[in-house]
Image (cartoon, rainbow, N blue to C red; front, side):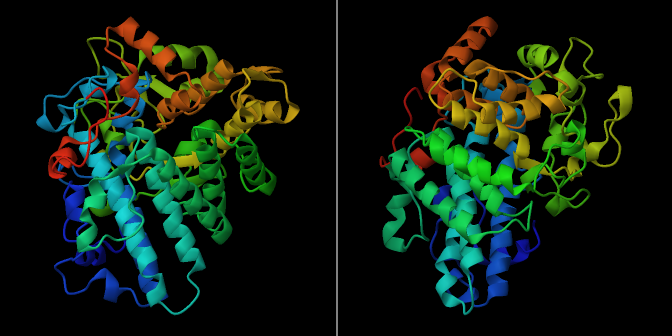
Length: 477
């Protein structure tokens, strides 16, 4: 999605990691956000720039914004699903903090993700601010920009809690807003409003751009996540996707290696072999392939769960690392670079650090399991026929028998083995009020130091420092 990176560079002063840099309202270029976007085509180009920010830079330069490419560190590795063999390079020295629940406010991955996702918000705001400068119908453009802003804020609010609420391009007199954290309920109000606009203004043309179904699915998850969940609306949104009959459940392995298949609702697109358009997180999951020596390994706890409950998914979820000779370690099998698993030797062909594997944000199995969750609501189990139908569709593909009474714990387990390595586990545990219980037990069993304050990440220390006392740190840090 980096089709117009050279244009965006004219619009933004820099891609530095501090919010104070990318929220600067007066770019040094003579071509500013106020006078550049005057046609529909130019706004479309600006939208591509928002996806570019999500996609992130595939280099190992710590000063670049890496978008979703660092997301596995701050989500999956804090969920009990994955761990790392800490590399010797300085660039990866922060990696081990996540699995041991010892994340510091100075952690570089945390700072990079925070700045990257506020960059998404900034670029979406630039598009929205220029709608009035353009003649023609901008309904779909507004809907798409608001979907992307809602998506970015949803990830940030779940990871950091209260946040600066930035719903427009800041002027010189408003710069304190970027350091003023507001209650997360206000952030959720904006997310819901943005996604409602997206649902009403989009169709299902795309899979690697915003769509109606993507907005419906994301909004359903937002409704399930609210402090007072709206189970009814979440159920209805899932049923709209189900009843559209536009999505299905192909062979499990094809979900990841036959891209844009019928299960994909929304994915971030990458292209292999192109420095500006590829990703390197696939290579980081490998041993002696990427810059690191292997990160995001499946924990033994996850392997045991997949072995017991994965069914036909097991062989496509993880594999034993053939290059790890001192102990048994297990790699993610969903994202071998460009689908090349290298056979039993573990060698990968081509250029794995320029991989083209798309990153799946939302797929149909997730929606089916959310449908079950929405119907279950606050209960500890459900025998509702519609809930069971959705739940058992996912199990049937895995070669498992139907369940006639789904408990919350069974739903969590099914989500874990179905969506392993896809960065959902931590959010699932928090949403279903099981995070402290499960992560405390996991932490104790492994000698880690989990406490309830670890469910939120620290606000990056550089943001706190730049705020001159305005921005307060999260508890526990």
